[in-house]
Length: 145
Image 1 (cartoon, rainbow, N blue to C red):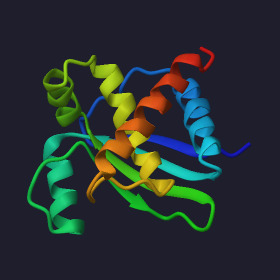
Image 2 (cartoon, one colour; image 1 turned 90 degrees about the horizontal axis):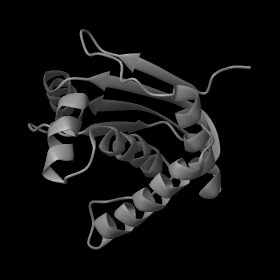
Image 3 (cartoon, one colour; image 1 turned 30 degrees about the vertical axis):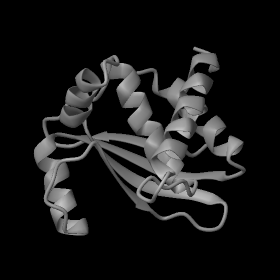
């Protein structure tokens, strides 16, 4: 069986220590709950300098962020590449008083939710995205270990 999700670490960035098979089941369940089909997904964990480079090169943005999602979805099939800055995730976890692991899971699913068509830039959209993130994190708690 071909793997639908690929997990990569850029340069010297350490790979997070997760049960990736559990995360993959969770991500698949979240995608199904949005009436979508799971296609190829690639997560690239990186540092702040790499995410800034990607942000400048592809989006003409000159700031750090926790995730950049490149959407290759077609129809109901979700597919994309997601760059995640572990540096920003770590600093954000302290700002919002969440554990690093929980904040990283929130960011991981945030990218998938974008691929499912949920936006967070327009009026009221941030609250909608947060609701979807919270429901997805609840699903993670019930995903078998």
